[in-house]
Image 1 (cartoon, one colour):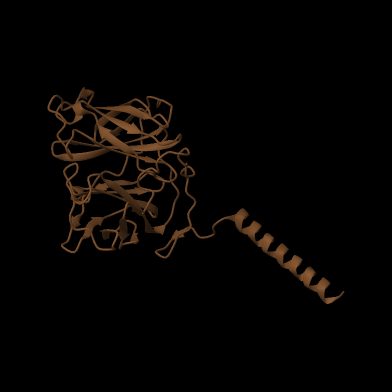
Image 2 (cartoon, rainbow, N blue to C red; image 1 turned 135 degrees about the vertical axis):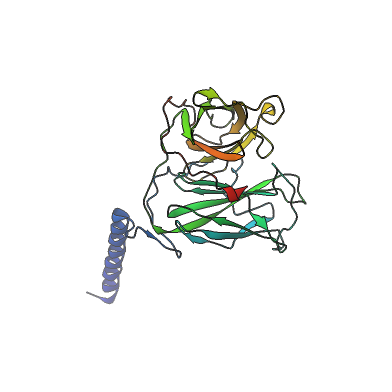
Length: 313
């Protein structure tokens, strides 16, 4: 065999070896199910990321930087089941910390934490130091990948931004799934019923009715400028939906039992809705799983939800 033939044979053998190695890695998947601060290998049960239709605006929360502002997450990993401090900075186009904000929904910044499976949720309100660093104690129960959303309006702007970044919660990882779609859920003895559904590519009306012991709750208290606060996240990529309360939810005409919102779903898929409502000075969170274009069956959602902790308000 001449030298050129030898080189050709060696190249072919090398290519075959790499192809076999790639096939083995793909077939067997990740070997380590222990989450670490340096990185983690996990088999998410959430649906694959769903891209918005061509020509649509990119949903909020998918970008760490937008319109000259960036979310600089100083804490990138925390241990599961232990109280830790989460720190971050919002930076402007020059890289300087933003220290002046407009008040929106009663706060200068809203911080949302959600696990990739959308089974753990927190709505918190951190404290900002003079140098622009925000901080908040957190205690997240399960290891895995999380998304951190900062929702704010800089003082120099008139429109709000929602920036997102990834957080690792370390510890042994166990896959989980959100509950199946349901029209009702129960939290702390309160039963919340959902009427309406999401429509892909358009705005939909969603109404929530709160009852306790079968009786309508008519003494809902204002929370963040309304009688309820709703966050909606898309399964897979955790896109942050645009949601706003109807006028009757923020006026003096009603304090329950129903609060209603308009939500815009950018695509078909599965979404998780988190409704915060306040009664007797305590904020509770009712969570729902919905799919675009389908009405949930009237059965209870047994797996409720990681409620917002008191230090978040």
